[in-house]
Length: 329
Image (cartoon, rainbow, N blue to C red; front, side, top):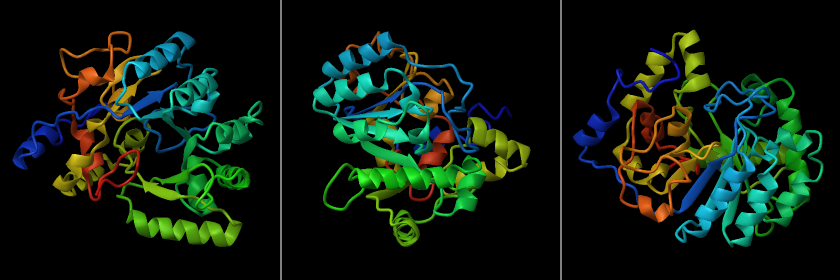
């Protein structure tokens, strides 16, 4: 089975929904527009479902970024623009998107890998983010150097800690004031995340005691069995075992909160998807729906539309659930 394709021959997600009387899985009004501005990144992480890295050339063009802003203006129900990548800050249109969205009064989330803040020509970026009240959601798969460097590369932990200290100095993550700073935990192996609340307490204790670092919340996100992580599972003979783990831990209570119900994902080329994972697998919206933001007049047009699913969706519905905002139950 190719590691980059949905594991439909392993188990049927739709059949599972039917068995639990949870079909049809339909879209609610879209409140989040998630924009993937490209696959260029300064890191190459083992768990990355985007297959991002320094050699990727897929980058959102200015015309596409401008169309995102036009679509936002025509979509009053959208409250949040969630900018991701790659390292989204490496896109030359990143600041244009941030400033344009903020002028519209919407909330902006930047999914930051932390180490990009130490890249050349990024010296003024932290202050720019703070000045525009950009909410940061930053990947830090553990509070120990060994586990972080194992998943994300040698020296990443130290650079991440330096970035977090710099953000704290700008007011990020300070209780009761300043911009929001959230951290993201991904398991370093083929298993489900532990309790989000317990891990958050552990992170706050360990990072606080060792480095004086503060942050607002920790989100736990399940590693999705696609692309780079799936390839790693295949190499280690763990792919079917991991899929079985996800399928066997399907939790029907998570379905109501899956992110695809209120989120639309926009690719670097303007293509439209139900979620970022479907985007990486190039699973388009169901037949009859627009294919790109250039064909979509408003995200309101998608309310009530069906959602395209495949077996990787078990990753969002296993255990306590998984979304861009962490646990769903």
